[in-house]
Length: 436
Ligand SMILES: NC(=O)c1ccc[n+]([C@@H]2O[C@H](COP(=O)([O-])OP(=O)(O)OC[C@H]3O[C@@H](n4cnc5c(N)ncnc54)[C@H](O)[C@@H]3O)[C@@H](O)[C@H]2O)c1
Figure (tube, rainbow, N blue to C red):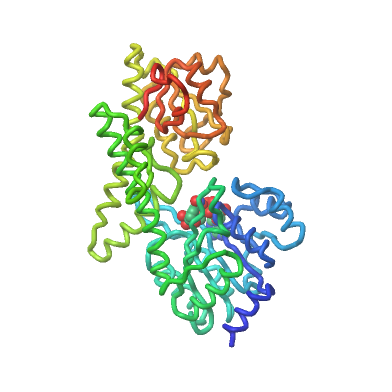
């Protein structure tokens, strides 16, 4: 009875939707839900973010400012730092961070904390869906027991599901609404309810038989990328020894119309999905006395890339008789990938730290990150003036932002180490540009 009433509330939009954690994942989803006609409450621990949302101010790159303002002005989206309104909510989506600790062990403290808050206020007939990336078993083994401390039972009194978020920040083609959404429940009733919920908001919903399968889907997807990037990074290291241009090899390889998929080397991997998430699976596999060798190896290779960039920078400086400790280097791009401002786990940070450790004077330019006071660094993005470009001994391109004029950089700089092949279209670049 509760179940069909809840599904009916989803269909006729009378359901009140909660989204816990208004970050890269939570805010775009909250916006989609509001645009689908639901009244949405964002629960966010950061009071500055809450104040911004309630003023209709956007802080996530992928969201169009006017779209957010519109749903706030219509009263469809509000934010709060507290959990008092939880009993009023019909569906609650959780999109809080799932980091790793220093020893690459999953840190589920945010998921636990939120689940405890929800458990204290849980009522019959609510749907709870975890969207944070995690190892298979989290929803059932970690969340369900906490929620059942309320005295209510999953499947009978409330519904519990996992639906991994696949958003690709900066991707203009594939966004929250048109990226197929995998959904798995802790039982068939939870699946039915969660599927009905997401179908109102996302174009394509892919039901799977359990929450564990849904969790595994997401970590597999991220592992697939980590492993393939590691493979091309390893190829880049070998091509360097063999005197081959890895980019030429790859461009030719990717003309094959089947059986291959483009992945490119770079200074390392950043963001959360690729460097961190696969280790969630690696950790869980140990419980089954299983070693996920590909994950360990991919992480190892990808983490060596900043060191390779440093070594190659030394070689480039050595050609002109410059010692690293007497050189001035401009790192071009701090974000972990093009055209976004997210610097989490960005390999450019590691490159900067390594070069500074060698005594070099290191500056950075990133059109999306004007200041950087994190990770023990205190830096300001410098302007790309003619004087600056001419005065540095080396420019290292670490992020291929599309709003940088690479022809000008190559023209003015003395030497360029391009770790992303961002200068591909610059004519006669061979004189000054060294590729990864
Ligand atoms: N960013 C991506 O590209 C991406 C893509 C797919 C999946 N994911 C996964 O989605 C999850 C969220 O990632 P994100 O990138 O949106 O993180 P984020 O850091 O951008 O956002 C998380 C938000 O949750 C808030 N928060 C933390 N603890 C809270 C609490 N106890 N109560 C309320 N709010 C709380 C934070 O203040 C922050 O605003 C992670 O598991 C991540 O791995 C991220």
